[in-house]
Length: 316
Image 1 (cartoon, helix red, strand yellow):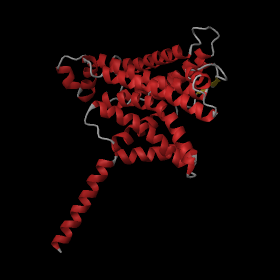
Image 2: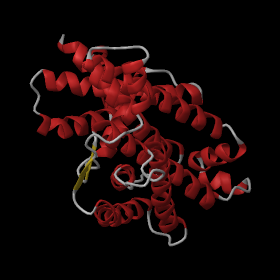
Image 3: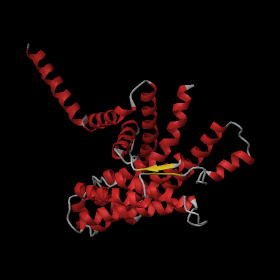
């Protein structure tokens, strides 16, 4: 039974964090830009969504509108980082750190306190919750909530991933990919690489903020701590997906990001169920990423050792 609960929780959280992984994928993989803004933009998305859901005004409290507002907030955060890098010539990592640091204060201003709680207010999950309560009646509360959250997140993920796939197949999307692949070559082809970086980072952080908004509505809370080490989760999901699935095409690459995110959450769930302390999970994630990133060097070193031993035995 425990594995069922792990799978259930992993599917719920994996679909949310897949949007985070998709945003990190765009910045780190497609743009080849080490963007650390994510730790601030995910909290920004979470806080904006929670703040608007808590409003008394009918339009402003609409949970679906709050997702769009959260996305726009993330886009602005990404554009600021890109502006610092492209216009003020600040190195990419430092530009991300500056934005992340500034967002900490902005997020506190948005929420007014370190955390917000949504209580029993309606979220994006209300329509399907109503459906499973009054039309196709599911009496088991746990199963009903799982179906509600899983299907809602699946619909949103499908829309986002299809939209991203379509966009990066357009002329503008291809120009962004060309910029990340070889910035100098892109410039020689007449592409405004600074503009592409601004657009790309805006989209990436918009998606990350959207993940934060889904988190806030799924768990009925927003707090300042959800952004800590979030880059590690996104990178680990991407790396795991790339390690397990072929990515000969862009579509397969996106699929690997989605599945990698879910599988990573399953691994985390299994680790916790085996008694691994949640306090040590960040260390486990960091070690995992370091090993995977160092895999080419490790392979080369092992091959050299193997060749030396082979020559030694051949000479003896």
